[in-house]
Length: 97
Image 1 (cartoon, one colour):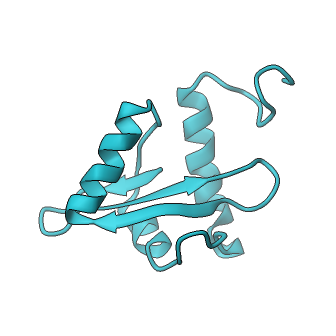
Image 2 (cartoon, rainbow, N blue to C red):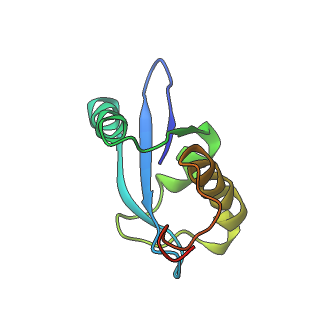
Image 3 (cartoon, rainbow, N blue to C red):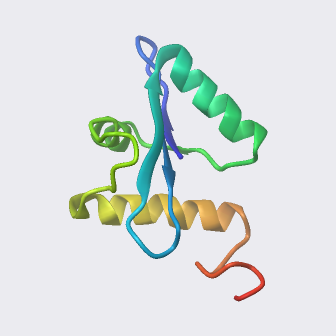
C-alpha cells in the first residue's frame, strides 16, 4: 500500500503481490475513497508507505494492471518496507521460510 496526503487532494494506491508475478494495483482513489482505502489498510494492519511521486505514477494504472518494469525498484522498496514492518525476512510464506 502506498499513500500520500495532500491538503487539496489525498490519494492512495494499494498493491497486491503473489510473490511470483509483478505486483498489481488492487485499489486506488482520491479524497474520501483514498481515506477509506487507508482506513481499511490500518484496520487490517497493512503497513502504509508514503511516497507522493510513486502514488501519482501508480494512480495512472488501471485496477488489476501489473506495475511496469520502470517501477519495479520503487515498488520493491515498498515491499521490503512492508516485510520489515511485519518482521519477515523472506518472500516465502512463514511456514516455508
